[in-house]
Amino acid sequence: MSSQVLREQAPAVEAWIKLIRGQSAAVKAVNAQLVADHGLTVNDFECMLLLARAEERQMRRVDLAEQLILTASGITRLLDGLEQEGWVDRAACASDRRVTYAVLTDDGLVKLREASKSHVADLRAFFEARYTNEELEQLAELLGRLTTDAPELDCSVD
Amino acid sequence: MSSQVLREQAPAVEAWIKLIRGQSAAVKAVNAQLVADHGLTVNDFECMLLLARAEERQMRRVDLAEQLILTASGITRLLDGLEQEGWVDRAACASDRRVTYAVLTDDGLVKLREASKSHVADLRAFFEARYTNEELEQLAELLGRLTTDAPELDCSVD
DNA sequence: GCGATACAATTGACTACGCAAGCAATAGTA
DNA sequence: TACTATTGCTTGCGTAGTCAATTGTATCGC
Image (cartoon, rainbow over all chains, first blue to last red; front, side, top):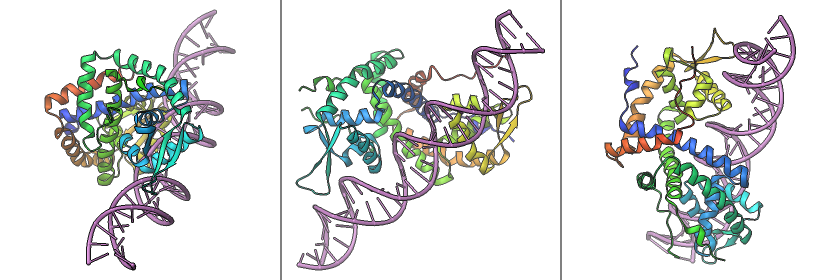
């Protein structure tokens, strides 16, 4: 029984495997550090970062979900945790009463800033040990094409 | 209270964000298809693929864990499922009785082959819609550097 | 050969999600 | 105006994975 076909590697398959392995390895390393140092998961951090950058430090849950590539229920649960810690609060929307905004509190901003210091340093250490700046830009450009369903994360020039 | 620091984007940070978003989006798409068509998760598939390619279609659990970037307990649970379906079996190791091999069964190989057809097609469709072959090789090369801790099953002196 | 240490694997308890169902509120249509 | 989607959000339940503790086996120093 020949397994020949199982050994073929289209470039797409090669890239796919390296993508899932590489991301797992990177997330495992970076997340462990972030949890150990600040008690935040990667998504906690990214969520607060999106809020910090948003107009009035608030966003609709649906928009958070889209940006973070999570489902609506995933966002509800993620925010549950951040609300309990007091880093995020709720606010009603005057023009659409279905909407509940998630708002980054002052405490949340402080926490985010504090966590940013070591987290960004960790990230840079991890990536800059493996790539030049030029390669990082190349990598970012290539990876950016994967989210052609989900929109741009660079919002607002403020 | 200025958020200035929160807007800085070192290339490493940019690449990091695109990595986690991009992988989420890609996995969500590909995995949904694989589950719908064959009742397999991406890790189920990758695990069986590793076994199919291994010497005698068998591997130590510890080595599977390393390759798949999962913990030992994650592997135990993943294999639990595959064993129940009859796609993977257990085998004792004569020289080290701590070890239990995971062995791909004939049924497992059949299942894997069958799933490969559409899965590889899905993968290629997803990636080749976004990249040229040259870009895929570039991407694979770059992503490969992320696992400089985990890869290569050299181990055993035998 | 014997004790300390390391390693392979499993288990229980927990977390972080996803999915499907459901409830309000809004928007589109007549 | 009423009627039917559609949208935003939450909840119950299920799944995939982690961590810490445990068991059994190997290996190393002596």
